[in-house]
Length: 613
Ligand code: C2E
Ligand code: CA
Ligand code: CA
Image (tube, protein in one colour):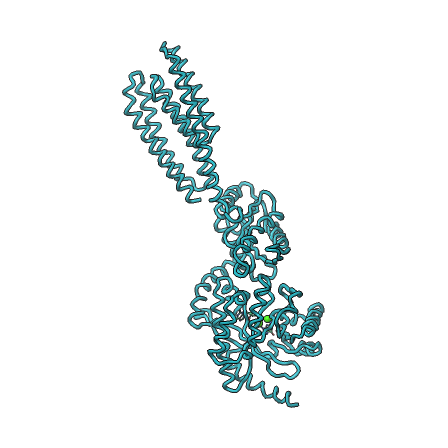
């Protein structure tokens, strides 16, 4: 948009020069026409000069494309009036100047208004010319030959015809360029510039109408993974399907724009907070149906942030950025939807600072691993410990993974982060082994890690580097790794397991639950999500899910682990259900390596006793 304005301003400057030159010419040539009254020459020249100055102000003052368009049209009307006045002044003498000016007007109007403009101005000028000629013949008794009149009229006609043809093409080009400047090339949706423009218009009207204006910002979940694993063509195809899918839940007055990447924004005029939240919910529901891509059905989620004017902001950019901040907050919520609040803004600022810090943290060893034991329900012995990453932030202290793992996933930093965690976990497991404590360490993987074709090789190298056997390492991943490219995830998991690494399906029950894949997955263990385990004492449906998962897991030949076990009662019920192992605050909280070693040292004794019974 800025480019277009800039180029139009160049045109504007040329016009300014023309106006100035016109004024000078009037002053210079005026005296050469003996029949011209000096007053006319003065008025015409002064008018041109004044208009040049005013026009400069107007053009500079136009901030939006629509505003600029208004100035351009107004300028055209004034320019034409001045020129017609000039014809009238100069045509007192039948000079070539009169024709030349007429031809210039036709060209000018063709540029501004296209074909119709050229023809309309040609007609007007011809008529004006004939009237002036007739009036002069009567008043002054001049006798103008018919040939001269015919020549002038045909000159105008010819100009109009040529210009209207040539100009049509130019205008077509200009329209195309404008469309490109205000629309996204891939999806054809309005872009950020057009959204801001429309938002500004709504906000200008807002104080008068009193109606609120809502903006939604939507970001697709794990779109990057779709792109990475299925290729950009499929990613593009998905993006193209989003607009039409969302349009079904919108009114015609609403604007849906693509802000870039997998981010979309929706402008809802005359909509308050409740209305906007309702639309957001409808949109999320519309996205729930799978997208047909390359003959496969792909599920994709989204997070939506809502901001409403005038409550949250009154300026377009600010409103949009607040909806963006809310969208980030929505990413952390279960509903995938959040309305802006001042709290989010603080989080948003903190998040930005965190993001730049995080790169440093990964490189400079600010990440530390805590370990949480998992124990066998029958023997009471330790089966493994889970490595849970923490960030020793120099100013903030210990930061939990929920605050920075999602950030690392979004920025692609997760690859290096996981590598760091794997390196430390394998080193630690081997160090403990050498010290006589043989306990496997489980490491959490993100979806992006599973789509990294180098992962198995990286792990093999790390194991080799520490001279560690593969069964010292366990990997945990959630069902989301299957969302984008199940085949590829399966391949990676297969090759990892073939190496002898134990694999657990984490947070079972809250993900995509592609039951169809469950028996094809190369798994050793299923970890029931802690929300069901924590809820199973008071909530019958949670208890049912736990029971069903134990049966399902066993039926498929996997061990079943319950995480989030906080009290003895839960432990008893899990034992009764035949659950294999537990992890949770009841057993131990995550703790630093030295404490973990102590804990293992103490815990191994009863385990050995239990095994010896
Ligand atoms: P997770 O894999 O489900 O890890 C278990 C989380 O549950 C841990 O939170 C742990 O402190 C918590 N927890 C354990 N026992 C109990 C309990 O009895 N009650 C309750 N309420 N919570 C319990 P933490 O350490 O904050 O980790 C949160 C999540 O961060 C993890 O969930 C995991 O998804 C992710 N994460 C942690 N470390 C890494 C890592 O190195 N890489 C990746 N990709 N993700 C990680
Ligand atoms: Ca885990
Ligand atoms: Ca878990």
